[in-house]
Length: 163
Image (cartoon, rainbow, N blue to C red; front, top):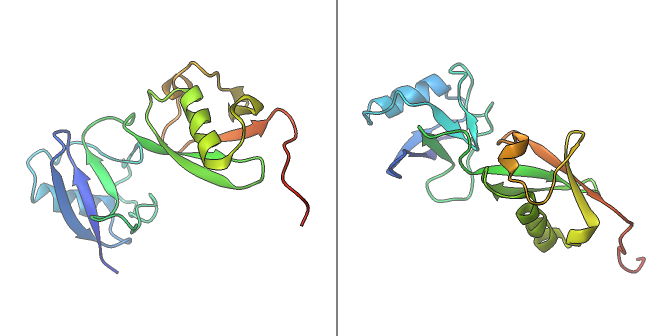
């Protein structure tokens, strides 16, 4: 089923193209190249370069969403643009937070506190075995669009009255 895909270049100009989940990155690049001069620039989605031209949009999880214009891919730029970071919660669930390389660990913890209610001072974040330190930016840990952090509580938290 066709859907819109938003292509944004470095000057923030937007091009909307119609694609299908089974379209390859090569086909998308050819469609962009037919309309835009700088189409030889690399494409990025959610902080990850779309380097495998034989891969489909579905393989990169570029699927229809509820946003007008559809998912946004970037033409040119860098992998450190904004991206969604998966935060795995102690309950087994997860949330996605939209961050940049300059977002600090403390800012991310603040967002998790606002979204989920885990007290800031009762959580630690880990990327693999490495504990993330509050004042440092995420880029210091090499986190990008395909990364995840584990949220760990430092003490047991009150979950509310038993049902």
